[in-house]
Length: 410
Image (cartoon, rainbow, N blue to C red; front, side):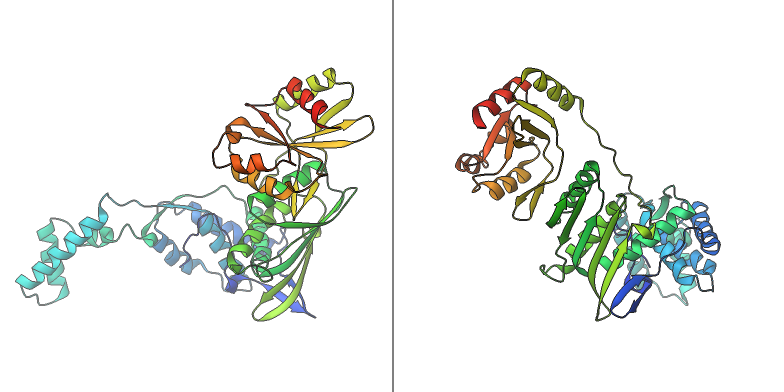
């Protein structure tokens, strides 16, 4: 039985379809226009739609009767795994089911001790009369709080083609789960693409090491679970979960070393795979307060001009940031400002530790005063004398920022 792992649509190893040739590994992906596979996808989606309010256990039994006996059977099982993971299953049992179950079991034990029954049927009839319920009803609700008795209450909106893209993505994720030495190359990437991608790396707690950032080309590696980390599955899962976000960039290449079935092989995949991500790529957005600050600052300053963060900034120790603002003077000197709001405690600690010993770091840390006043942060903030720090309340004002720049940056 496929039990749902919250937030995951990974395929189990037996559902992965790949081939290894000359130490190169490639996933067997499906064309999103394959009519035979589209028919399989439509049928299984329709099945789930038509079986709302059925239990997990019941769905498994019913699906066994719909299983295609063909070359597409493994694809069918993959579709089934993905849909089970995407569906919402809820308990429909009464409150205190556990206590009621214990009471029913005790009552049944007492009844069998008090009286001899010729067969199981006689016992069931007697017990049903005692409890004033049909025995079938008792049996059905006795373990209704167990996972396999949860009922299907919601199916996500998904088309047959969407399901195929999910399946293809999961095939690659299954290999990345067992990967190391992951290297990603972005070509002709925009600022918004870089910002989007590195925010997702942050979110998934991955540590990229940047090798190249020339013009619009960016190359970075992510040390995988088999090379540096003892918790292999956890780190591999982070890399695999990050992959759908990479699909939202236009021109990319990924290579990795994969160990599967005691074999080492090289994985290479690019945007030519034509897999569509199930995540929507967020469009670049500049908040109103940002645009107002930029406009007001540039009106007041004749020496420095400010714009929104323009590019990826490598600050050492495998660390990076996309600063919120870029300040440039008449001699083309650049200074970056990265802001840390009250919910950015851990990020601020990491950033200070990274740059606290650098004399030439072109980065100003904009720190919300609520963070500055946290007792646990004050020693680190006060001791980092080389770090340029600017403090603000809810959001910096153009006047205070201009004054700080003129007084601090020479």
